Length: 305
Image (tube, rainbow, N blue to C red; front, side, top):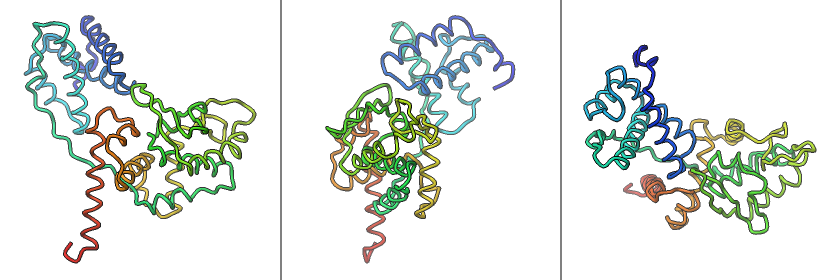
């Protein structure tokens, strides 16, 4: 974007329209704050670009939107997110004005490369779960976090933001607040419950240092964990058991949870509920992961593979 465009002010009507759109998608769809902020940035950038050419968001034509896309650079995913923001915004305008013509309707969407989630083998997961030193408070914590994430398929953000009150040890479930503020109940499993119980009894009081923190999992300073802290401990324990850093991330535990459940006959709808996916199509990607695993197994061991 040219310097004069990046400095250009946004017309009041465009600012109000963007604000109304953000409020609408927040209230209707419960999108995450990061997504809402990205949509706002994308629309404000488009408004500045149009403003430098004497147009506004509401008066933009299909040629304007196409020209804007052509003038931008970025990865395919960034382009797709930008197009998603524009499509949703102009669909919002069309709903509020029957005579409005949506300029994004005939714009071709970018083809996203299909990237399959990476999962570890079950034996690798076993090694990773056994890696922390359970004779130390931090080792007890790390083992409990790894066990809980793999047992329940949590997102990294869900794991580190878990409040102590979210765990019901008697019923063996977690109450998770996922994307869009949607709650779901997730079973924990006896093994994970055992390790979380050991952490609660033998580590958390020492890490809390006499305070009453809300978070379930605490750092050595008695505060809630962060995504970066968890990534560091996952990488450290993976290196101990010979898992290459390029093959591991905190999210790999969630992918492994889903893939292994499918491999053992889990129902796709049930998996969707456990993962907290709003759409079944998002969950179906894991069936492709399972199929790829079967293909590799066939190629490796069948005499005509």
